[in-house]
Length: 117
Image (tube, rainbow, N blue to C red):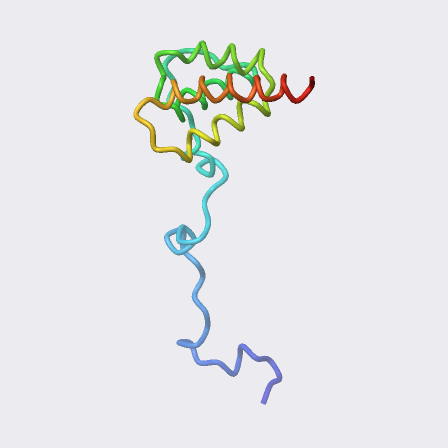
């Protein structure tokens, strides 16, 4: 009798080699890993981080018509203020998220200005 473990197994007990179909259950190829995170490309170019943040704000606020406004805000305003206002709006159930966002940004800026005095 040999000490080899595989020689003691019958052919039906030997594990089968994985096929490509079996591996797709738990793993993805690197090329398809980020497919669900792609932005819808309308032909424009996003080359800076603030442009990406502005676009994501426009999507979150359902206001793609004013994407350039949010890009400008992302470039000029304090990121903490924008993220705080965006968090407030995402938790609220509002008809016009963009209007509520702009109001909250103004309110936070005024609170910071009063706090500094």
